[in-house]
Length: 468
Image (cartoon, rainbow, N blue to C red; front, side, top):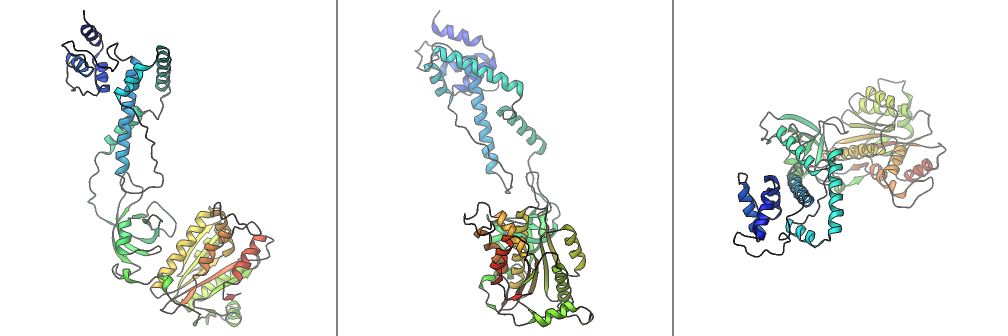
């Protein structure tokens, strides 16, 4: 009996699945309906041992066919490579960016022939050791049910595809949506439909829409959106009907806030209410430190001295005497009951509040969105007043949110880089020559016993043009 008949007999003793695996490892692709004898002939042709008794090549299969552990290892490598290719194709088809996206690391795998060559060059001792180790790992993986096993991941993927199926284009009725645009550094953004805080109903705004309509952070947008797909978290904006109450095409030619000419305040905001002669606080403010449109003022007070009462009096006076002014009250790191009280106190203005139980990132985010919203209104020639309570706590929040910082620490543990964002916020107050104004009245704490609060007050003391 020659070697060809001996090897054919060895291959015919194996079942059809093992023969298919060997053929795939050698680079062959037997059909799904191929008979066992055809697969054996294919393996013999691939190994160079044909029916005519030709000499085998140097692949190592002239001595003996692959062992069972080599077949299992080759099958696992092919499965990992297939799953990796599927995951890479899925990652390239992503339509909407999400915060919790994770990318699986791919592993470079060798082909079947290279693995066989290396197996032929190993010593018998290494073969037996690796064989036992491979079988042990395979058994442990099967017993423990490793969730990262490629076979399990592929089965889960098939289940998801079976549940979801091919996604068809959405052809339902658009949903009307309106809110403030919150842009990200990457170019896209979200339309905040419930105030300035993120919510599940926020609509996703693509980079193409931002560039098409020259949208800016803080714009008030009215449009239509579609519901979110299974692979998305938020609804997507379909069309833009208006930007800040005007036609989207007209919004492209509006000036930038930084290009407007700042001036000193030249028009007073009257605080005294004619129908309330007993309100002496408003009368004293008009006499001692009048407030004008475009003022950058500070309300300095120790804790528990009544600054919140002064703020409420100023808010009521502006709403009563100047209904054309857009009023925004920003409460940073405040008590929850004070936020509720301010919302019930105001008549037409807007309250943006972040309580002290929220992280510092939320304080800084709300402050940035609020000031950007005010800038967009000033660009259209409107008069805006922001009452900030308070700038000391906002600076503390930036000191925590700045991260590692610049490495230069001032007295009281205040990082020098943490003062720039609140200064940029406070410095946006100005009277504009082209029309419109932005007034900011911020409270500052003194005599708290904290060195950091003293440093913050001294830094902002010279930046304002009014102090109460």
